[in-house]
Image (cartoon, rainbow, N blue to C red; front, side, top):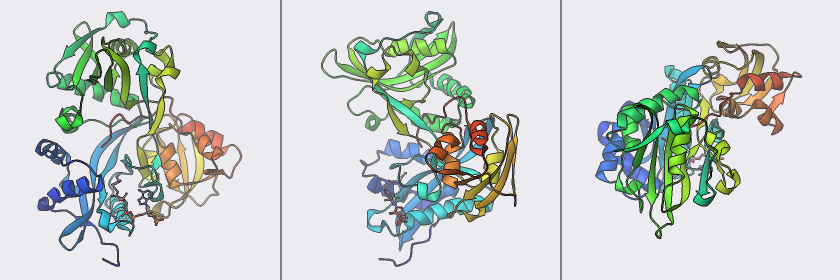
Amino acid sequence: MPSEPLTPRPLTESEVDQVCALDEIAFVSDPYSPELNALVRETFELDRMIGSFDGAQMVACACIFSFEMAVPGGRVPMAGVSWVSVLPTHRRRGLLTGLMRRQLHGLHESGGEAVAGLTASEPPIYGRFGYGQATSGVAMTVPRHKAALRLPRGTDEVSVRMVANDESFDDRLEIYNRHVDTRPGMLVRSATWARGLAADLPESRPGSSVLRVVLAERGTKPIGYATYRTKPERLGKGTVIVQEIIADDPAGYGALLHYLFDIDLTATISIDRTVPTDSPLLHLLMNPRAAEPRLYDALYLRLVDVDRALAARTYAAPIDTVIEVVDDFCPWNAGRWRLTGDEKGAGCERTSAGADLVLGVRELGTAYLGGVTLRALANAGLVREQRGGAVAEASKAFASDVAPWLPFGF
Ligand SMILES: CC(C)(COP(=O)(O)OP(=O)(O)OC[C@H]1O[C@@H](n2cnc3c(N)ncnc32)[C@H](O)[C@@H]1OP(=O)(O)O)[C@@H](O)C(=O)NCCC(=O)NCCS
């Protein structure tokens, strides 16, 4: 048993197979099929993968994916942290901490992404490293007999056509990617990632149908799509498991909902991957209570370099505020920063002026996309106001008028 945490290092090509093997053990998952293995290997960026070794054995690993994320006013590069695993024999002795330090300090030193993000297997893990929960999503289980909808005007002008999964791939990718800038938190989807999400491997559908795809069309123009599976139970009691609904406008969204919520011989519609917390669905259901909406944490964000990250988004109202940041894990962020900005742009500089607000870097990650207000965090005692009115001013400026959302994990 090593007495010191084992220092992580970059992986070589020949070590990548060990990542999947370690992941299977760490996540207590079924063995990866060769097809799944090949799909995930396509997404790996070898020069962004690290591992810790005990002799020849890989005992911890993590990787970064290079993503582009929508933020208020534009997009920022985001380091997508994933494949974080520590062998059960080597836990609770600092290996994860070593991986996190290597990633975040590495990004800072190399001038890499100013923002890192991840989805967590368990919410308590990453706060200590400065990651704050920036997006939530809503899952629902709607009994079909209580699934009546108020359909938006124009729904009947949109047709819904069933298409083959591979045949509609390009249309879906285009529709998804033109949606990215409408919501903070959405990630640009590359063809590689889209292929992985569209892959219909047997292990991703235990007991349910192949992935079904419908396109919403106005005339011949695709304006939205939905993907779903059906799960047969007793005849007439099947479930529609909805994966994605994306549409350019309310009528397209309404047409897709109308289709999904009224498929004969099904009794339940399950919104499996979540919809945004301000999804139109919540407003179109006649009986939202019957859908039993459940809130899930999704994207956790970490500001790697507070100044670059805060200057990379815009603000809904003018802001000129000195923020004192507490950050023990990435000490270059600690101290006072003057943030100035508005709807057009922003700047963030070191300052010796007195602080208006004091908060941890984790809270900045939580508030970064504008879905959780600084007011809410202040009410929880997580943001301290040093100048009267500073919370109100900053809260308004940071807020987004659409709820941030991460439609898929990574
Ligand atoms: C989660 C995991 C990576 C932690 O690795 P580890 O090397 O044991 O973590 P560390 O020893 O560096 O722990 C650092 C701190 O996090 C805490 N911690 C670790 N895992 C935790 C968990 N699951 N829940 C809450 N706290 C946790 C430790 O107690 C420790 O706290 P301390 O500094 O106050 O003592 C590891 O348990 C694992 O591989 N789990 C299964 C796969 C998984 O969930 N990966 C995360 C994917 S998002």
